[in-house]
Length: 266
Image 1 (spheres, rainbow, N blue to C red):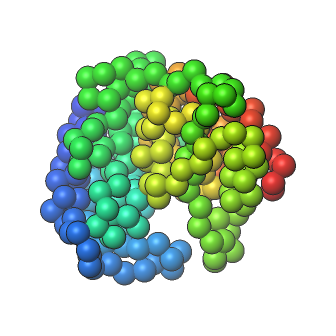
Image 2 (cartoon, helix red, strand yellow; image 1 turned 30 degrees about the vertical axis):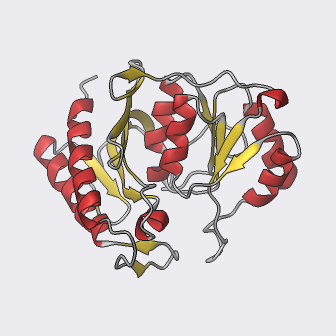
């Protein structure tokens, strides 16, 4: 199977996108508008989305490009998924907790993923069958498995407004997990949380979002680091109809506990 783009080319695009993120980054008072789903939109989002489409098109005409803010579709089995600024809330608040996310899928299965933190110059990347990496360091998930290990689980949550925006009750899940010895952390950037699972810093993540671009890049990075990824109910994750049923990503050892928590609370 000939892959239409290389991983190093996706990383180069990520570096360019990171430069745009830093250009627009201010300590406070960043200009933004609020989209219909109540999330903020900045000039960096739209500029990076356009940059991705332009650069991918120079590399290949064989891929669909599905961006959070703009898309360029060709009905190809290959799809590029892009979140220009993941963690837009802290980004607009002047907090350097945001990433650029880019993933390549083939027939709705993740093949490559890149998550870039331009503020620390950390490039997380993976290709199917070739492992996951932080810059030049191979990534491996943790072995945290029991209550005495004090597992850390990251999550992101927001109001279910409009209906369907956040269809799963993550706060109840968090309470359930906390009662069982889990430490919960919300840093408002699912990309950051996903790579924290891949590096072994976090044991897992619970995410209620339904958009492909929030999950596909981290999916391949976590699995190539030895972790496990399912939908939020523990079933195989299907990227269909432009929506997913949330996700759970973990080191594998605490995955059953995460599934148990979700099913008990939803």
